[in-house]
Image (cartoon, rainbow, N blue to C red; front, side):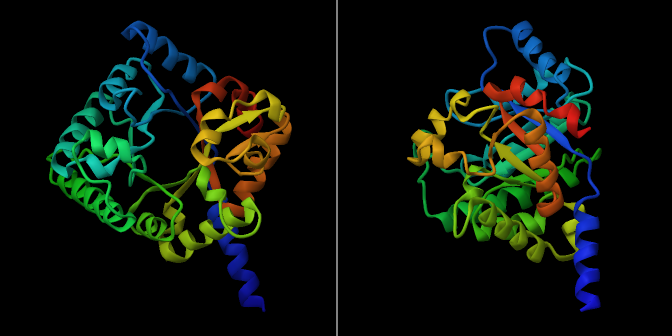
Length: 294
């Protein structure tokens, strides 16, 4: 019994050691470099640690946007997340290496297996099966790491892997520096928080002794004082779930800044999540939470 208590205590100490970090995903570059720089500067002024960009057609072109964003000093720059299914490890490693250099080492490389069939079709590639997309993700993660390590200056940013399935979480636990739980991490058996807890436990078991080296991230698709204030139309369209049901997910934060801060403190205590990424439409509302967690 004493051994079990010690293990629980040790797990909490290890998983709670990290300070909070906060990121924002900006969805497009706007009409000019100066306008883009102003938006990135706003992200920094609001107290965020990382400016992130997605990887979808119709959204920002990731690497040019990150290099231009390097004009704003201090803030880290990341992808959330690149679709590994349409990428070549060699070409990606080239782009990552120079983006890392041109951002003075502030790059964080976020990767996922891809989930939009139309984007594979636009790239002239088959969507494939979940297994084939997972194998491609592993090929990209492994290949990029090896190619970057072979560079003379070893330009190796931390790698984030995002996903909710058992196999992708096992891959992430073996190979990623950061693991992100998307909105779908709240889907599953039991309550949404129980579903997230089960996924964190899978990561912990698969990572073993590595767990202390892995940062856990939660993707927040919506935040606000009241559910009526939060635009969840994109998530509703993607999932078919009404806002009232989405509000129960860990990735949707409803309440006052103090209430949201208390929820995130509990997530860090119970799940070890210390890195939170927010979509651009909610960044000003969520910014009121940040000082309460510093």
